[in-house]
Structure formats: structure tokens, C-alpha cells
Length: 146
Image (cartoon, rainbow, N blue to C red; front, side, top):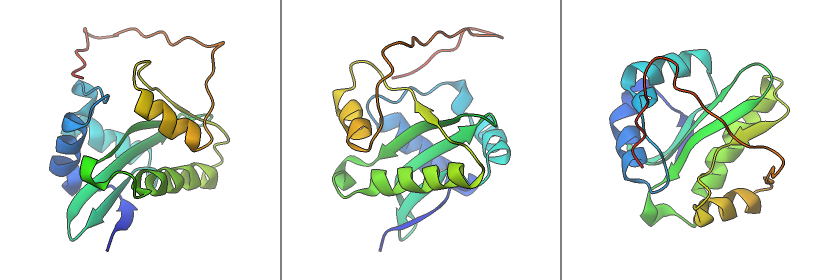
């Protein structure tokens, strides 16, 4: 039986393995075990896993800055896709945002990730063509493995 529960640090080995093997998820040093621990402490009740008998088949990270929410690394194992697991994870994350007063949430999607774009739009998300994303690496160049 699939259950959705809050992501715990003990889940890190399975969750990072899931993210690393999922297409169109960029992994960087921000995803280290230490950084994930800090992220979860700053954003309690916003990150979840879907599991069955201790096997994690999906995971999502959610966080906010007090004004806007952000979803990172929503992933479901290939063999479990199409069973609404991603939607269940997303809904739990959005409910968590609602409970802490966040009214809008964002997600970054690679421009060539057509499957991802379909998922997000099917679930009510809309493109913001008037916005462009700009980034800067503050301390050092960040390498993203995709």
C-alpha cells in the first residue's frame, strides 16, 4: 500500500538515487546530505515521499521564502508513473504551503522537458512567458548534472 509521508533524513540514500536517475532533474552540490538537512529544517512539513514497504517510489522537495513557494525535484520512479503518485506528492506539498500562508508557488522546468511541462500544466500550472530566469553562482561555479 502506497503511503505519502514527510521526507526524513533517513530517506536521503533512496531519494538522491531517485533524483540522480530521473531524467530532467539537475543535481548539484545544493543536493548534498548536509544541504538537504538544512533545507528540511528551514521548510518543515513541505517535502514528502511516496513509499510502499520502505521502498521510495517518489519524492518532492518544497520550500518557501515567506512569500512564494517553490517546488524542487518532484520525481517518480519510471515504473510507478501514471498512477497519480506525482499528483499526490504535489497536492501534499501545496497543502503544506497553504497551511503556512503561501499563496503562489513556482517550479523551474527545463525548456526541453515536454513530459514535465505536460504534467505541470495538466495539474493547473501556467507558463509565465513574460518572465525570464537569471542565476548567479555566489561562492563558486555550480556544476549541475542532468
